[in-house]
Length: 125
Image: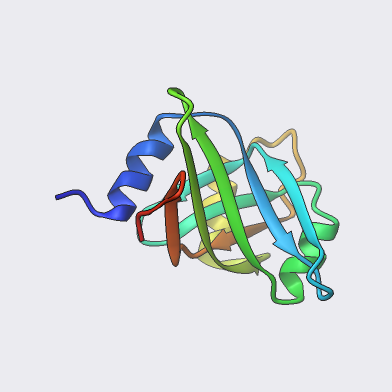
């Protein structure tokens, strides 16, 4: 049987368009952005390049948890949730730099470690 993270990985390979990253500020006000430079790394989670974060960066640095939402080519939605961490050096940052488009700043990398995953309303993890 395929486990939840295998389903997420398969869906990610079949995704279409940008993903959406949600964070919250200290007052619990949500902030949602589109992200184009994002990768799923098995065993690590999702890595997002910080090219133009502002509120998102502040939210992550203040301890926000996050959610990433994406669609597959057949229009099925998937969402992952978990803690966020911010990296300006080290393995997560270096991973991002290996695939990051140099026309963007790529000042840091954000990692979402997956603790919960959904396909529509169905919980996968």
